[in-house]
Length: 473
Image 1 (cartoon, rainbow, N blue to C red):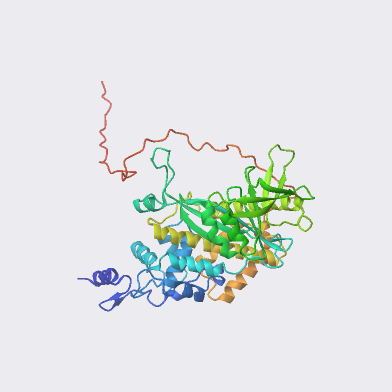
Image 2: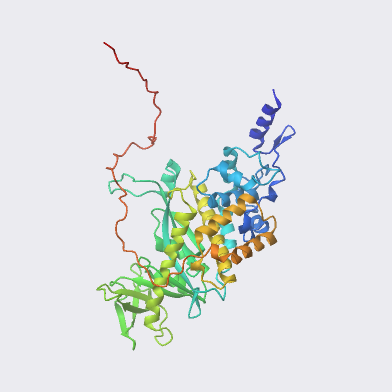
């Protein structure tokens, strides 16, 4: 048997470790890999704390793919979400002479992700997002002393496997026939001034957004003001956030807050919201109603800022559109950072959770970098192009040019010095885009549903081509 055969057996038997004295060239050397300019927010010691004791397969030797490298690899998968496993490994080690040319097989990388488990990536996100992104001098991040936050949810499509479909569920046509891919629901708490996610909850397609949003209450405090969309009014949700000392502004429809009305001097009024299942439970709110540009539709806001003198109704109404910054954050994550048509790469629920937490971590540290650039030059973070910063961050990973935290910090300052490269054009006037159909998304009729487990494509025999020569007469 050749040396190559022995080496291959050692690879398979040892799980990228060593067997019969044959070791993989990566063993003990992956500590030099970094995440480029983003490493300053996910340094090796932070990753080590997040992965310590969290392996899904404890007791195994780390081999060529220890947990710390696997965590960086998972983050790189989120940073280069349109690339394959092999391409992402090349991005990480292509500029490292001692590692390039010896990349593990895809199956080994998948197994390393399974060993890492989703809890480690969630712990990493929570550690990185624990500190506020907006500083005291960050432009557009505060309103009357409050840090403004927004809560909203979105869906991510997962590969159509039996495990994902059974766990996450999918939309249906009302006749129990599923439509499209299985979907995971994510609800995030975002700093509207920096568009940075600071807390998140992950559920299934059938999870309710208000239920998931209650998990985010622990991330707010007395100095925060949280903006909610119209689908969130709930006594239990309100109480969870109010108990943390946060100020709340929540949109609602005309059926809510119609009891115990007491008018105030500025035209707003105090009212009560009762829980549907527990009528004795209620909260007191101030109701602010207004129209936009003479439209007949009345927008109703509920808030616990009860003093009309300290918080004028007009200013509360003008604040609410800040919630749309959350929509911009979702668009940046799903469209620019994740250009794969919205479909994740993980084929089982545990890896889906792991991938989502990695996506949120990468998005968070990208917004930290954007805020650093903006603060250094006295700009609003909204003016900094997410796409350009994303591309430059990817280049620093490929070049592996920030071997120390000091190098990473200097690279961020260099980006701030070259501000014209990252600034979006200044638009002095407000803009609007009507919600009209711009693309025809269904050009063809829907295909009939197939039996469960039927593959999308099937093997077939090659076609036989027979020439038919022209007969000359």
